[in-house]
Length: 318
Image (cartoon, rainbow, N blue to C red; front, side, top):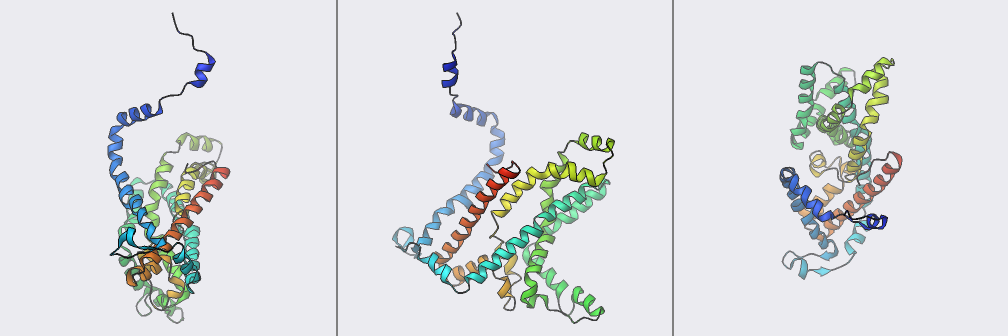
């Protein structure tokens, strides 16, 4: 005789999620093994160092360690906001982050759309290789290339200016140009590599949609606006949310290699300030507080962006 299952039994039934999780992990164990190096990387280099953030609330002494150092509460944060140049450094960081978001973030999207329109496979692969290559150059090499191009004596830019009757400009020696140089060099170096994810997303679009639109008389522009871009929205939003999490984290090397005494006014950011105050002046607790401030701002931006994205596009990180 079969047991009768009532509605109450169905409502009160709870699956064994722990068992199902372990079953799935065993079933897809090969994938978990492949993911293990990445997981270990984030645990060792991203999560474990978070414990060191405690020194932001201490007068850390390398000989006394975490447990023996004096607790000072939020003293270093007060010092940070009272520092006379902190406003300038923070505004530089915010402006560069904003310019990076406005100009550098869309660049891989546009480049991916252009590459996707190329029909000759060999030529497309060749161009992809060319635009990927700058990403593998160090910022030292990139700065050397920029210095050669922008040199007031032998740089091609100044040679063109002189050919049209203008005076040569020392671009890296003036505050007014440093932000443009930083953003432009970042676009040149990383835009090509950034197209990889977008090209993968473009490859996943159903070609039947394009065929149906052609029957309806849609050209390439209309197909891009009605099919391609809407299909890319989920990918764009996820990468956008990840990008704003690094809004204040422009990268130390990217900026440091271009800085000099003449352009520090508009070029110095939180990362370079942390290097100077932390490693050169050995103010470990103070610079940890500055770094923690950066991280908290990034977290807040991600949370706000995630909420807005979920309400407007339905896409979110969680």
